[in-house]
Image 1: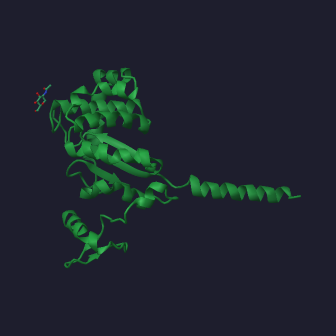
Image 2: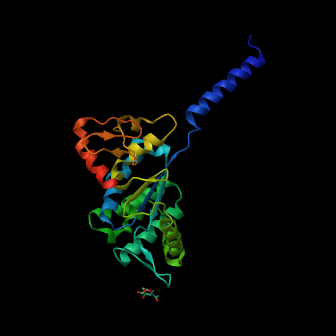
Image 3: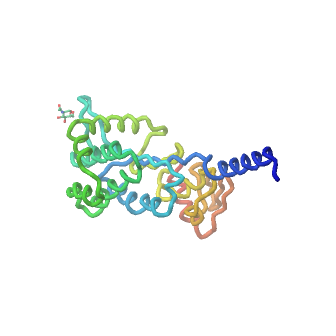
Length: 246
Ligand SMILES: *[C@@H]1O[C@H](CO)[C@@H](O)[C@H](O)[C@H]1NC(C)=O
């Protein structure tokens, strides 16, 4: 018969093993600074970002959407948006959705629906997204009409303006505090590389990455700070990206 002490030790060991492999690694922070009517933003969200909810990558990601982008706060505290007042309306509606449904899978469902309408040029039908997603409109409409949404936008303005380094364009994708610049469509690779826990299946298909810190030499040789080797056929494209980053 096993002694109680031995039993306790083995329980403790299995707890520690379980904890270390399952629960201890912090999620990777993934922030998207965007504005609702920017075509590159809507296409990125619909064609790329949405995939993480299907392939399971969302389980290791802490996704933060910041719908403000290149808007400006005037001296009288009104907000001017790059694509006009309708963009301000939709930025605010999406900010309200995030606030009203803090669960990312809920607010992303709604925001995805709106951005899909942006992609096909039918964003003025955005209210159909309540019905489409089965999410109740009451709280979002109240947030928008009461001025709460405007306050949320002013907070997003402050958050966007505080970015270090400052954003240069949208979409501006930041993984664990590091902007991805032009390589933002490749964000899944950066997320997988940043994660310190057991990698989910979605990471197995990710190509070798690529850090913003990499260094280009004068020839077509490429040196990476962390020694990642890229097959020669891919180098051309990578060289181009290097030039854009530096
Ligand atoms: C606030 O300032 C902007 C730009 O200076 C101007 O276009 C707008 O009419 C002003 N709004 C109000 C409510 O005064």
